[in-house]
Length: 310
Image (cartoon, rainbow, N blue to C red; front, side, top):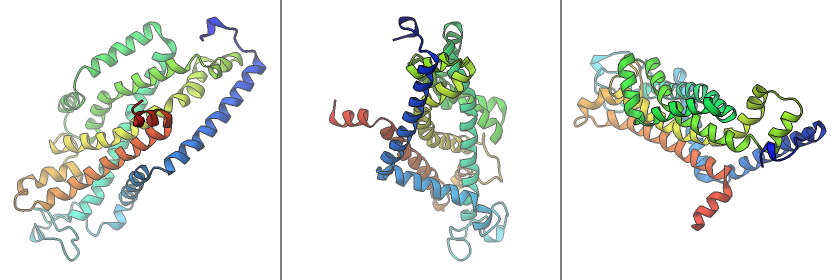
């Protein structure tokens, strides 16, 4: 029931509703953690992500060699000795490059995701809360962006901006924000007439406070799930663009760049492509497992019905 169909809560009632909403959010968060802790596959994905993140952070201390140091006398050495995974065609330690590549790949994906959220969250909040012409303008822009295949559009933008990690992140953010903005808008439309929002209005909250303090936190659940699932896609996109020469540039150690460098040696030294390829697959799978677990933990009843075929 919307605000025109009933009386606005008075100040005291509004304060009580807000306190009740705070307790509900706290209880729901504890329930989410409890359900997630029972999902073995989600915990496996989280463990893999934490391990890779730890290896990336500790790469300067764990890497046995300089990842960009060229030593042609040691080129294409098999695994063994101080070169745990052997060397590439320029004599660089593959294991060291994998560790430093994790820093570049994961760090770039996180920065790109941050840029996506920085664009999409305000636009989605404005579209859902304001409605009218603002909503229509933002949604038409979203429709235009979503009309093109995301990776193809990112490839075109990256080609126009030129190669480099920064330009690649801008291209990905310029494509990926639309889906998040549409999701946030839908959540805000479903939430903005609920009792706790009306109560906040009753106690004098302005539009900015309502959006930041009440609407955004209530809408973040599905956004977090989508962001977790998209981290794997982002890493795949980053590696793909770097493989094509539009992302990280040599000698920067990045998994996609390592795949590109190893391509001429696929038949003679397949391990050079196998190592970064497995890392990309592993991190994408881990984020997908965690995202699926979060989705089931946020909506246990819906997933239960789905399993029953209801």
